Amino acid sequence: LTPQLLSLQFSTDSVAQHKICVKEHRVRAEKTTQRPLDRTLFVLNIPPYCSEGVIKELFSQFGPVQSVELREKPGSFEHSGPKLAKYFTPAQKQGFRVGYIVFQKAISITAVKSHPHDVPLVVSTEQRPVWTGLQKWIHQYKQSFAQPDKLQEAVDTFMQDYDKRKEEEAERQKEQAEEQLEDEEGWVKVTRGKSGTKTRPHSEVSNQKALQKESRKRKRKELMNFYTWQHRNTQKEHIAELRKKFEEDKQRIALLRAQRKFRPY
Image (cartoon, rainbow, N blue to C red; front, side, top):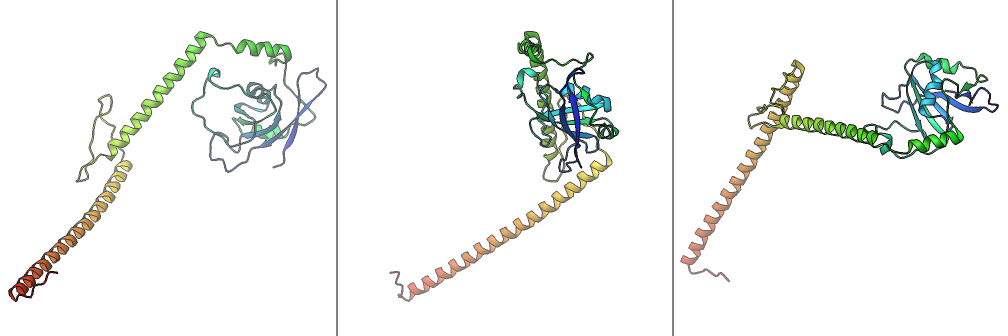
């Protein structure tokens, strides 16, 4: 796929323009639904004054934008767990970045491709102003101070999500452990859940899979029991052979003693 150049103009009265390179995202090696191949736009050379919100507003003229992801360099999507608040994330480097824009409809990609390159996209307007210079530094300085109530709210939210994930993980482990509990006859032990309620009835497909699993386990157990019985019989035969030889040696020694030809040394 051939990349296309689009022009960015910071404001309507700006003289200089900035070029960005856009291309339809077609990396089939990515096995993730976060970047659908038919609705994702790959963008290069995004300037530092364009945040994710600015990019979303800027490209919304081509269609509804589902998500925007800005990175320092191209790469596969990495799920980093729950989204953390700004208080717990390191500050991002200010520089030119790459972006992945996911639209809600595939026709938006066609609209971006058909946009003329000599018609610039205006970044800062009266409806969506973008701060730069001294105003931007003052805003960033004010935002760097953590308000106690906001910080406490972020901590409480994170701990609630953490406790919920831990409870779900413990519940899954408990269910797996209950499925593995069985006695010698192959019967599965059924116990009550954490809240004392009975477990939900299984579907016909799950019951059939459970029966097939138990049948395979029973066959393996029978085979192992057969090998154990064979090994025990071999040991018994070996012990019987040793006892037989011992009795024969005792009789031979008794015969030699009777003939007074016994020489132990």
